[in-house]
Length: 348
Image 1 (cartoon, rainbow, N blue to C red):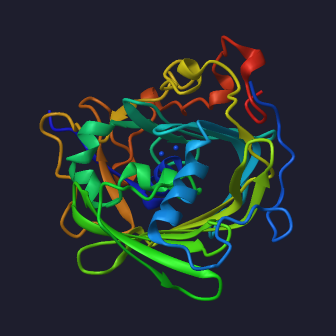
Image 2 (image 1 turned 135 degrees about the vertical axis):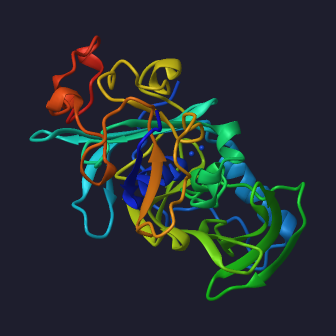
């Protein structure tokens, strides 16, 4: 039997990109806005060398093993703002869960050492999508999201100037800014990584990834940097992410970061939520079943990306999978939770 081909909006892929961007004995640190008075000066002359930039940027990142923030806000054009909790542990572990009191859970995005996943309550296809990192790297799906997963994790500021690649610069890039560029190899070819850094405080202000044709593939602009004297770390509280190839953009606002302390067991926190989302189909983005339709269909709506589902799932209108036996899919709020105390705001 040929599996039906279904399509889901690019908003789902934007959600996936968000998980990558957020795929990095402590207490809550009251950050203060990083200013000339509060933030330590990294470069007295304002004319740092490449080695000085590398040392300062890499040292800031190295001090952060994990981050946690409660009450972060995600904003995207044409959609209402949504509040949730973020947890990450460098380099690949990430979790973003969000919901509201009135509608229940809305988003579950995550990544661990093996795979990443995303689920959205209002998606046309109610499913838990996932992919293993190794398989995704060589998958046709990557052509639709041509960025390394770790790049968007770096987008919040936890980036490094890798000494293993050749860098050009620093060069002036506007008031109080310098730019360095490096050539990096990815599964989609050689790309150029651009970092714009404050010339006195070593804040990573802007990051861009260019394809071999010089087109911007992904961009992250960070602002409202805060310095934690306790940990000696500066992090942004506002990040604007743009993915031109997907015609997508979103912003993340964080009230405060908790550094090097996670809410619970990391093995549980960063595990694929099969139990919590057990009523939804599990769809591997990189392994469509035998007989599935091609990833991209001729004449398909360019604003939609196709995904194959296992054979036997009945197709509904426009190719979306219909609910079993004509019954609506239950919301996550209807699914029993084995650990009620661990449920976050909006998931109760």
